[in-house]
Image 1 (cartoon, helix red, strand yellow):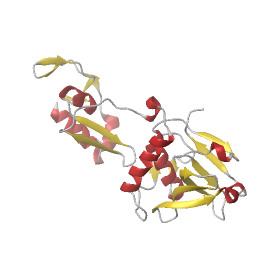
Image 2 (cartoon, helix red, strand yellow):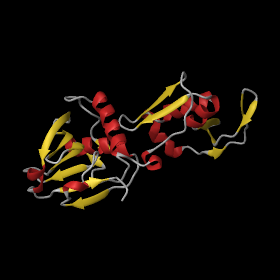
Image 3 (cartoon, helix red, strand yellow):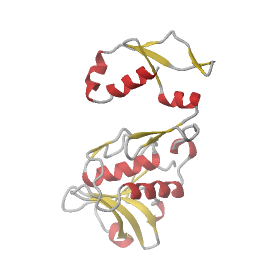
Image 4 (tube, one colour):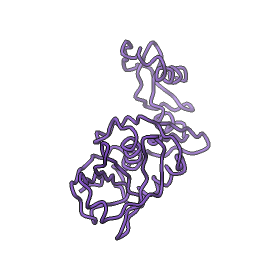
Length: 223
């Protein structure tokens, strides 16, 4: 089983082009952990068994987590297995979104280059984002997972919440920022420019934004 896992990791790298030529069939073998039979969804590829890493973590009791922001899997043998939770299951709150943004700030402090171009699978307006839109989508995916997007043109100030994307026209192709927090007078944001560096703590005043053309809100909070 371990050989199959290693082979799967190898296929995710330079050999990924060969995946289309492989044939996967449900395995007929049975699996045991400490002498007790367990049920895995397993497939045989080139006579190797492929099993979801999270299923093995649950059976053997070690932690498996996924970091959306860095597109990385983390295994911790010292921590017990916990069921995966998502923003969809729990329902996002401004507090939970702000916590995710705080973690991102630790990973990508001001001046840090983030993964770019950022390719998102969430179906948002900037799924192939670069510069400001790439950073904004990365932040949104980290906070909201696979929740759907919703667009609001000329939003009211009351509609804006932490994690929302605010877009407005400028002399280029427009600019988009991520809301960290809001007061009655301004929003505090994280954003990026053409140099693909994360930037934290910028402020945009309510009166200024509401005078911009193309003033748009992209949110993923359920209605």
